[in-house]
Length: 155
Image 1 (tube, helix red, strand yellow):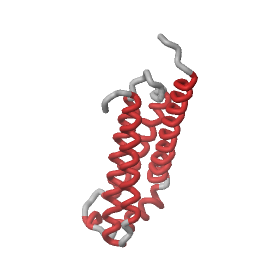
Image 2: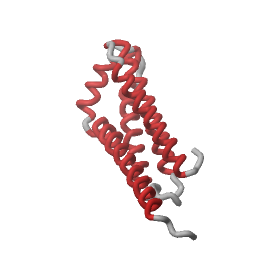
Image 3: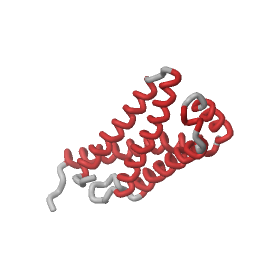
Image 4: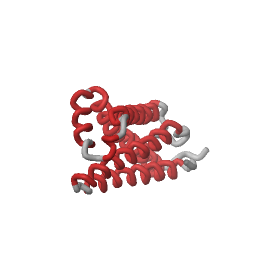
């Protein structure tokens, strides 16, 4: 096996550090959000129920369950990103199983949150937050594809 040049080693190190940095951003973004929903439930539930009260969602049972489920999914996604780091999936020769599931779950979560923001935007004319959530979803997808492309493994 040929020895890597210093430029290739540097490029590989930067790619690995970049991937771990992206994972850490998702860990604290999703992990903190999920933890707040689940651990501070008495304040959070009242706020969310009040926010969704003018929407058609308030007429269906299960709003509280949906909010808890979203918080749970956020925690699971953060744990998948942590498992990916522990498994050293940032290395080129390790299959990125947990990372794939983490990104997939993050996309699903952002779609759920985007749907909720879209409902709220229809009632309070705040479309900027919906656009911002679409941006998060798009950037998550682009990052996922770029990471898997550099790993040379199909999704």
